[in-house]
Amino acid sequence: MNSELNSLYEKFNQYKDMNLSLNMARGKPGKAQLDLSNNILNPELLGNYKSEDGTEVRNYGVLDGISECKRLYSEILEVPEKNIIVFGNASLTIMYDYISQCMVFGAGDKPWAAQQSIKFLCPVPGYDRHFAILEHFGIEMVNIPMNSEGPDMDMIDEYIKDDKVKGIICVPMYANPNGITYSEDVINRFASLKPSAKDFRVIWDNAYCVHH
Figure 1: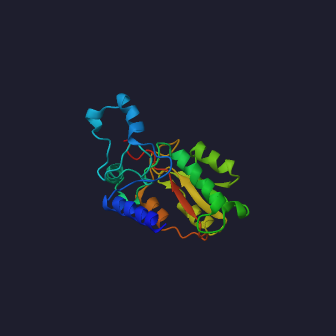
Figure 2: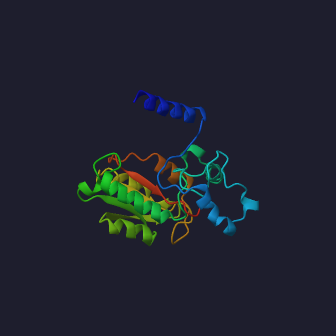
Figure 3: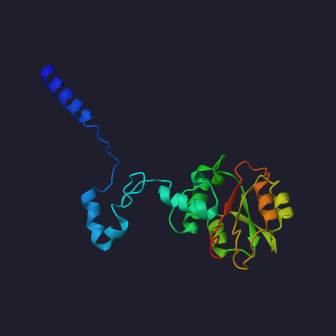
């Protein structure tokens, strides 16, 4: 038995001495499987399909986004790279998923589904698909009128005194459907909001920030 155990230790140490760096995550295709797609890609353009940190970009992984993409969006959005998460191309999917998580797990307080009669502030006229998400989860919508500067911030300041008001969902640049862009004063007031609800969230759907 001791000789068998010693043999196993010897093999184990041999593997350790190889200094391998193995990704043992479940479900990740191997290189041979990934190479099956090479004929529909352009290897001359894409090179070895590796990002600068060595990540194989054809595979799963990198939960917060490829570093080069984050750096690109950092320059476009003027937001620090560490504050950027790269998802897919559909902001509505992200918002639906986020509201769903808040309903089930909460956002710093009890799950929204466990709280009675929660509300969201909705600049109007606004984006019907935002409203559809809130309607789907049974969240009461409170209309906030728009003016040439953005939503009426005095009304918002009043409504957020109610801890049942859990957030606001808006398009700050070229807003649907009237094309209004929020003024610097409105944006500063958003940043200075002091809501009663500790799980208040601003969903800032800046989908058109580079459309000009």
